[in-house]
Image 1 (cartoon, rainbow, N blue to C red):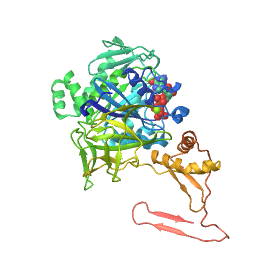
Image 2 (tube, helix red, strand yellow):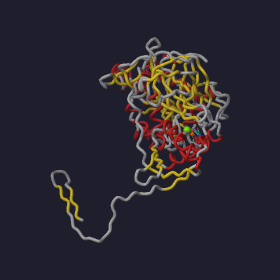
Image 3 (cartoon, rainbow, N blue to C red):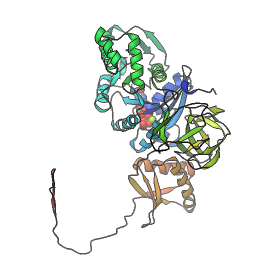
Image 4 (cartoon, rainbow, N blue to C red):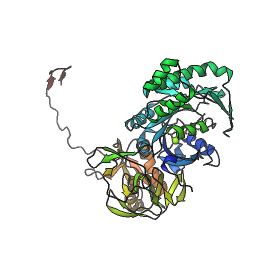
Amino acid sequence: MKVFDAAAIRNVALVGHTGSGKTQLASALLFDAGAAPRLGKVDEGTAVTDYDDEALARRHTLAATPAFLEWQHTKINLIDTPGVANFVSEARAALRAVDGALVVVDAVGGVQVSTEKIWAAAEDAKLTRILVCSRMDRERASLDRAVESMRATLARTCVPVQWPIGEAETFTGVVDLVTRRAYTFARDGSGTMTEGAVPDASVAAVEAARTALIEMVAETDDALMERFFESGTLDDAALADGLARAVARAAIFPVYCASGLLNIGMPLLADAIVRSVPSPASRPFPGLDASGAPAAREASDSAPLELWIWKTIADPFAGRLSLFRVISGVATSDATVRNLTRDADERLGHLLVLEGKTQTHVAELRAGDLGAVAKLKDTHTGDRLGDRHADFTVPPLVFSEPVLSYAMEPKSRSDEDKIGPAMQRLLEEDQALGYGRDPQTHELLLSGQGQLHIEVTVAKLRRRFGVEVTLKPPRIAYLETITAPVEAHGRHKKQTGGHGQFCDC
Ligand SMILES: Nc1nc2c(ncn2[C@@H]2O[C@H](COP(=O)(O)OP(=O)(O)OP(=O)(O)O)[C@@H](O)[C@H]2O)c(=O)[nH]1
Ligand SMILES: [Mg+2]
């Protein structure tokens, strides 16, 4: 396993509404880069990042799931995330571990609500974002309509940098609007790509889209604006350079076209990640200093070691798996480190890199890289491990409060014995859950983000820990009740400015 320096690493999360094609896109990228032996398919249960029982059973990604590929001598760490609203905390945590996002938008449906929510989280972090107009091969796919919805709901500066060759059943590739080169792909999933001139039928549309792109790029930079006014355009080098800089600092959000299912457009997308997403070397990791003011840590190999745990996976056999980002320094297998959050020693054991369900041992991971380690004693999501008590902290991950509760009854005596420890493990993995005994009704309550969240948790209890439970609506502990008829009259009036309030009962 090769070792990569911060400058040769890109960390990106795939985010977007459920069904927009993130997982399929990840499988195609991994296949084209040689990281997967075949083109995995969501619908056949072979996608690299949908591997656990719950994801396979429901055909939805239900947890942030890492994979990686090598492209142009660069390691791209991809984190696939759930688009289902109940699991948005997973996507939010992933965004904290990366330096850029691929925001996937369905070419038929356009921007949908989960995309808007996760976009807001990326906006807060000022993350570089690359938009992918996905599933371009589907009936009624339209780049124009998708971009219109992106501009209306995400940002005015969403702008196509590619023009599709064909749409829906005729979609075969794209024209790069910067270079005016056309790339067509075999529609058999092989990824076979042919480069050529812009097809005659597309010339007019390509020129119009290119002009719109030039105007948008010129707008982001005073020097470019001046050049644009002088000559009425930008030369290729100025356009490419101005675009790359505007994308990196999240002033422009470039739109790419792709089909993950037919494996069209992947090499160009991987190029874009390498070119546009900041490497950890150029984006110091954000956190807080001792006084609570914003601070950032350089990804330097020679600095003391500092790891941040962004996620924990509970495995009944392998134990706790802690997923981390190396903020600074070099992590080595078998090192003893301090848990800076809990002030306790931990031994790192084997360092791992994750490719969906496949775990590979690595001897070391350098600053900026993502990895995992199994069986830490007392380390939890959000903790920092390292060599020093630093003047630097990482703000806690924020999990949504549960909105729905069920009463949970273990089916047998043995289920009753096992449920406590099993739930403890699941709570470590998923902090958006709630669990505990209601002091009034004495019922065991399981709370979550919605019906699916609860169902998935019950399925995990059964499949991973062999614990069977039944769910019931929780009993309500009535504290007061009406015992006799009465009559009363009340009036509420508040007319101090504004619309005022009036109520008569
Ligand atoms: N026609 C077509 N279908 C696609 C494409 N990409 C994905 N699909 C299908 O769309 C469905 C959803 O794809 P996924 O990749 O699972 O979508 P997702 O964004 O990962 O969804 P969540 O995991 O629920 O957030 C599956 O049935 C895919 O086969 C594509 O490029 N073209
Ligand atoms: Mg998915």
